Image 1 (tube, rainbow, N blue to C red):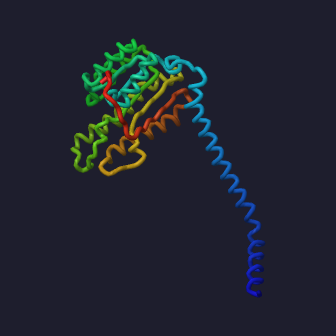
Image 2: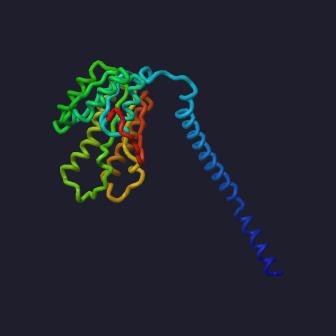
Image 3: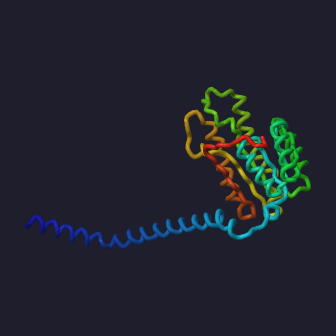
Length: 259
């Protein structure tokens, strides 16, 4: 009985000495809970605004909200090709920027025939420094560019050890998926900022979220595109520029008439 009394006495003393901290800890817990609740509320509002309101409330056409033209780099990739077709379905004319004319020639012709939009194919060899930029600027001259879409090279999805990759191939991949995507955005962005409207879309891969063996290059390059998008959003969202980062995981697609 004495042992029990001693324990109860000790408990009361400890409780009395810690009583002053309980209120502080309760306040900290309440503030943390409130902050998490606000974050959840913000995410729910974003979910409703992005996915539900556009389906309920009629909104402006894409051409009115962003512009009449889109510049597409990497349109031969399946996700970028589907994105391009959706833009054309909404009446957006397309400027294809490619290093291989044959990869997008049939796509351009099919979009023009199916949706009645204008299409332009610009051959750009980005290994020639600023010469490629001149051709792109000339194609964009006098046009209301509302979209720029960059897509990562699908060939990166094949597992390959970094030390087994030829040096020139590595340089070409970095140039194509990092330097060129950044340059394309740089070429289009000034006009968008002047008009206070436009959209930058970067299509990478879910590999940037979870590194896997044999995909060091893919993880690094797609990670750059995603963080590049985040940085653009932070800097230009307040100036009317919408930035979208798409990070698809496994993609299943069928060969369509656009192939």
